[in-house]
Image (cartoon, rainbow, N blue to C red; front, side, top):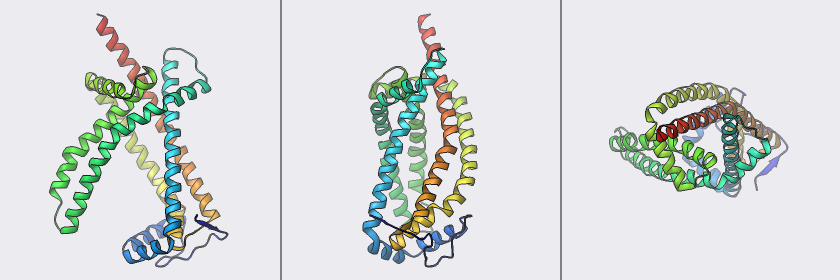
Length: 282
């Protein structure tokens, strides 16, 4: 397992001391990636520790992914219940989130695995094209990205939250929620376009602002710790705490916009579903 040193100072090659602005970290990243032999030597010397850190990070990511699904389902249920002028406690909302966890994960796997598989294939083709001739524009991979990945990504991003609504609100299964999400999307396409565009604009603006805040912080926290681990196999307690702090800041800053988007989607789903049922009765 990666060892923890008591000092926060780590010596780096091709690098000056890191500042909170992160400029030294980004400069070091450029120099480091520009020397493949340097990276290979560090891997040979600290591969076991690096693998432990990678697996630990992956497990942490999966845990946060699960918590995110539970929170998303709880928020959907709470918004839908309040929309009906009902009452719901935090415990009831979280219980519903736990019950919806498995089908929501199943939907995510069915929708995103094909997308990421296609992204990997096209990405490898693009990398191979550039490697063969770095001066030539990768026309075919770029065209495939534009014609396949972009529309597929938009479709998946639209159907996934609608399928989640079907799971939590209508108690649908994995496949039926995906079918329902597609039918709902197609049936209400014109009404959804405006909402999607507004939400996309808000997300772009918010992401830009958060990136301006978080990237300098990452340069002073995450990058130095990563380089320390790669170069020496050691990481200080102070660096671990700084990474934890950075992660908590990121989660806190991302929570408001995520909750806002989730509530807007839930209310839109409920209102349009009611309109559709009224039209069917006529």
